[in-house]
Image 1 (cartoon, one colour):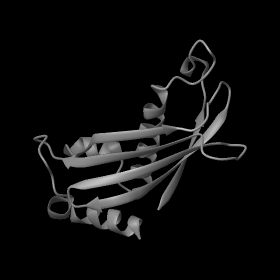
Image 2 (tube, one colour; image 1 turned 135 degrees about the vertical axis):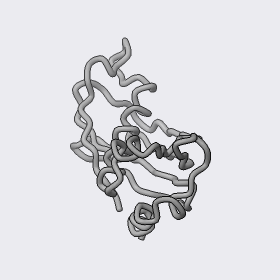
Image 3 (tube, rainbow, N blue to C red; image 1 turned 180 degrees about the horizontal axis):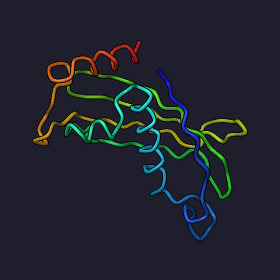
Image 4 (cartoon, helix red, strand yellow; image 1 turned 180 degrees about the vertical axis):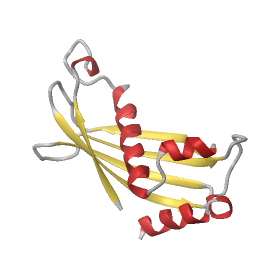
Length: 137
């Protein structure tokens, strides 16, 4: 499964040089991650209501080109490795007009439960874990 998230660069996203500030990219990837889970059928709102969280433990970004205001972009998000207690996601950011990726990223998450401890989706939410397994195929 792959999702596509549209991003419009806002003026306040840019630094004094008119280039998107490096701190904005993780926010955009979080938006893409929220879209990914919503498409999967397990939205952040649902996660929050039952106390489950894909806690990020690692984020790696690679800047390949600059983004500027008022550029229109999109992020492709897909799943990497997954297991009952962990998940890896990959992101690619593109200009809506085409071309090579502007930025790529990888995030690694562990599932935590209401007590903020490690949480097995396979044991506690098998229907959700099945959706994740199917999305990886």
